[in-house]
Length: 562
Image (cartoon, rainbow, N blue to C red; front, side, top):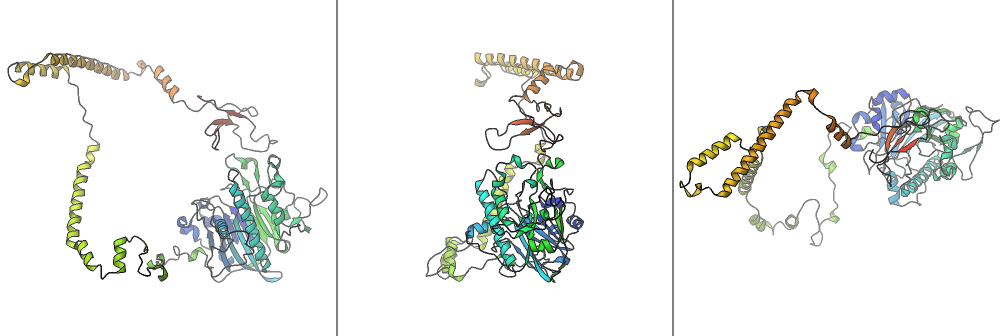
């Protein structure tokens, strides 16, 4: 049996064909995290994969956020499947159960922990050396503690405690347990690229939780086991940890074994990352059934890499899919749904009682409520108030005709958008002379409206001057348009300088001091006094300070106005 976990950073990682990628892993159970898909966006080709059965948990608060999914081969179909850790999201039918003691959390807190779609649990049967046994696989995507949001730190710790409570309860029921996924905490300094750069590394609450959650292995000394020899001696922690980090069991001294890297800084090129993806299991299963565990840093497509485990057991397949399987979802079942499925039945106790008017569901107004309560009494009034069908038809026709007239007045023809706009032209010398001649022919005495006053003469003089100025400007424009045909005569110096001063491009990047290479321009996006400011840093990927191929510590602010 082979089991695999991978934070895919979005289900679109499988854009080249999900079946092809699943088949390439050659695993019986494949658990993925951070699908970033909600149920309304889940398509059939992702949910229904030939040769596999899948189980999804969706975020109910935010779209494109969180989410986990478990794909099982048809030869490894689980007998039970459940969403969430609390049991609040599951139907009362076939569930795994064993929820443990949850009295420390309120019902609102429990529901909030499950509403982000972070857990899918499947229960399988396998045949091992000791005969038929149960195996429960918990696929988790643990929350990230945002430094700027203190409430998320407590949320993360609550999720850890709830995960431990459920896993230990299932283990106590007689089933083996495997917890795998993105835990979002690097446990030991060996699991971090630069632990000295982290303040109070050992005092981190997440690491303290892992200390008491995990079964401690004997510390390897320089004269002890090598990097690839599994640890054989176990010492139970004082708090009674029941689970083992299976990767460190087989590779207790392997360094630089990271599973997550920052894509913004290109840290994967220099392997400057952390190991936050795990496969935990109860120590008896690791000792007797596990063969090997390893990471796959060569697999790209996400900021995480897959982690796999090989077990010496044979899974038994369930003869039918659990109710949670996507093949049972109405949108993928292949049958037309009934309208009654979308309607909610309201109990009679919530209806009108003792003759009092209570609010009825939906869009009924007060008049309709009165009609529903006493239709016999309201019959005459209703007949008077409501117009006949013919009146309704005539009113509707008149309303449509008014709307059509209004639209015809406001909307124009499509060709009107392509016609040139009509502008008021200034008369030329010829038209103005002709106008003056016509007015002179009329002369005085032809009528009361044909008299010429001094102000009119003054206006005529001003207009004639305006015509002469317009004519000169038009001649200048024609001269410029003629000169544009001669590129050698065009002087672009002042114009080009003006636009360069107004629309200047990005500043010239300086050279970093260590590599003497052009730097890259960045912008501060974190809220604070420097929000929006630009700066230059070394263009190489982020890495350890001792790595000469990594980014140097060059930094320079971009001066304002440059």
